[in-house]
Image 1 (cartoon, rainbow, N blue to C red):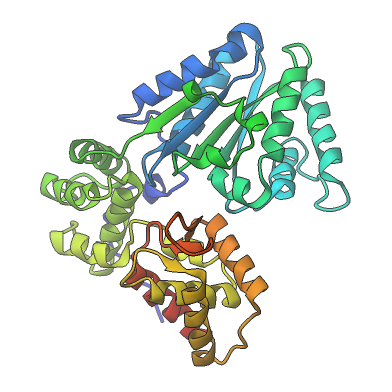
Image 2 (cartoon, one colour; image 1 turned 180 degrees about the horizontal axis):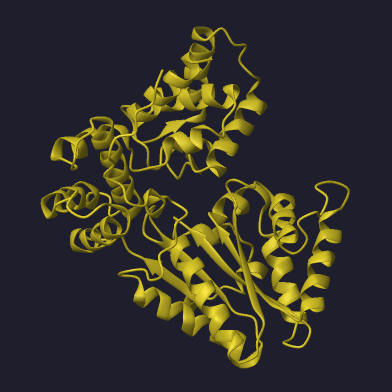
Length: 389
């Protein structure tokens, strides 16, 4: 087959990638300023400061934290304060051990994956900070995954280092990020005391006009002039405003551009945007499902099927559906304890929510719900990936 490279509507597709960090984040000035007022003591007093950022998917939390840290490091260096930072996604690195390893590899890329206890890793991190006389800002993204899996031990240990640290010896601060305003409820009082109510920064969903500005900015950076007109920018902003999700808007633009290129069109048309909408989901479903093995997919499929007509299902209902799903896919169902463990892991990944039933039910039972992905979309995705095996 011969590949024929035709003209493309993209000038610089990299500017649409999820990892691209703009020099300036539009409509997040207020949150950035608030972060600055919370973390100023780092530079002014060498003291440790913490912040908790929350908001729905695609509201700019992680990008704002990264952009802030880059600019703040520069600001600190003007006052001869050494500040460094790193970000860890707690869903991709599950558990205290994996998070610590990632932070240590920031200072020593060859730090071994095995052979050190958590306490030894902690000590090692402290020595790096002392050696470099450094104030280290740790961004823990999707922190509820860490809190649900391992509790608040790690956050408490960081807070202990912060109490003992000084500007001369090195210190540590934390920015915790979550989609859920109540993520901190998973902490015990000792760890929670380091995050006062006043340390909270809220990221509201973007409104239509804000999304229009964001898309306009990315069009200017990523697309050739004249390939995307204002009507299309409006259309993308309209579709994405239902979720207030900038990431979804940018993904729609990227996918629409790819469809235009496939057709060798000279510009992106409304039909390309509509086509993109059927491919792109406002939540990174594919990405999260990619983290699951077959046994967990079967558990999630049974929950998705059972949840189509109900807001909450009981653990018992989920297990009944699970037995049916296992039979359908010729898999041996796991015992109750293992099933319960899988549900807990799916909860930590944010794919399901679990809570104890309230009053009025006989005995306490665990209730399961789907937090964000429609049951049908989830079931279709899982059935497709289980069929592909």
